[in-house]
Image (cartoon, rainbow, N blue to C red):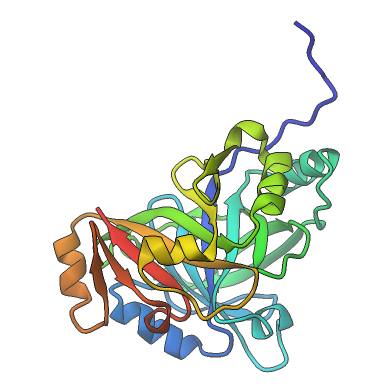
Amino acid sequence: MNQNLSAPILPIPVLDHVVVNVRDRLDTGQDCYERLGFTLTPRGYHSLGSMNHLAMFGTHYLELIAAGPNQRSDILDAPMGLNGLVFATESCARTYDALTQSGVQMRSAQQFSRPVALESGPEDATFRTTHFPYAPFGRLYFCEHLTRDLVWRDEWRRHRNGAIGISHFVIAARDSRPLAELFTRSFGAAAVRPLKNGYRLLSELVNIDMITPDEVETQFGTESADSRDTYMAALCLRVSSLETTRQALKHVPHEHRGDSVVVAPNDAMGTILAFHE
């Protein structure tokens, strides 16, 4: 059997976290997601100038990100809502090398940190990231955790709404072929499958669906006010009990749709949230 020994070993698509951009309204975002039943980590302050709260799950997390005045124009100038899809890597350097060999023009890795308050005193959680080419619909990148024990802590992984993890990340695209082609170059042809009105990137636990805006409205019964041709639209979250979710959301507008409970973008900082067992 012939084997191309010079071919790069492509990364496996594994979700690290997703990012909801709340721009300069982190207090509002924190209040909103706590009312939605999420347990949020204490506020973090990145060395890059951004601020965040996290909703931790077993192996991935949801991040609310914001920036102060005159900091992080990539956050402040972007629309409110889903703004980041982040894949896990054990080595940004190896991922960068493999993808650039595959023809993807990645940005060089950068390292940053944020303090984490512990009973024993503050310690710095440290990260490295390498980004895909700039995309107007949001940020795509890989994240390497140098201090995983400071991020994944059991006291932050239990949520009043019963959420135990993300099952689907949904991108609305009038033409999803360019994004599907990028993912094919990055992860291999076997990782991308055709869907009705789009494509799916098969990830280890979380599928990334690229479907038309009309299909988003059909699936979730609501649409975003986003007018871009491509935008990050929705998160589907697996829960331990929908009854637990309904109780947690009794003071938040929501709709029962099939086997899911759906929260519209206006009630989740610009993001469609769908909870299901």
